[in-house]
Length: 208
Image (cartoon, rainbow, N blue to C red; front, side):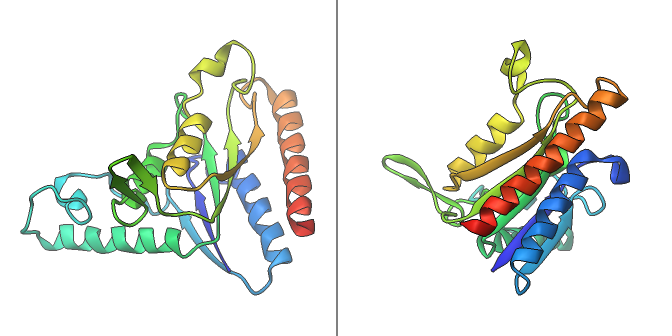
């Protein structure tokens, strides 16, 4: 069994999503001591965003000659998609930035969304190929977006659920801490509640 762990918060040790994702992975390690964990810090080791030469490594866009930098990025794209396809569980620390995900996480998504590998086009429309995986997302937000008037501005969790569904992954769980920018007391309460939810969720996994 393999777990792929991604972090995308820019806040380092002050990050709530990093703390939550680490707690999820620690519980997984205790439950599956023989499992392999692959970790990528998308901030410390950022993935360059797509351009034409990079995309040509896995999309038929007409380019045929590449310099060494582009070839290195093709190799990176292959490594990233292999990590996804060989993992049984994906744990992602995903804070909301400007109502969506971190651009560094979007760069990872753009690299692993590969026709013929993680999805395919058919006469009935696109079909996901990365089936049979579980995704657990440590979601953090400064405001309240799971309910109330700001729900319409949630392009973070909704996007991630839709994107993984496009790849054929429908077993997606969100463990959430909200209102983190609403003062120290509310932030502390939210983080403690989120870690309690992490513990309850991972306990349920152990019993499954």
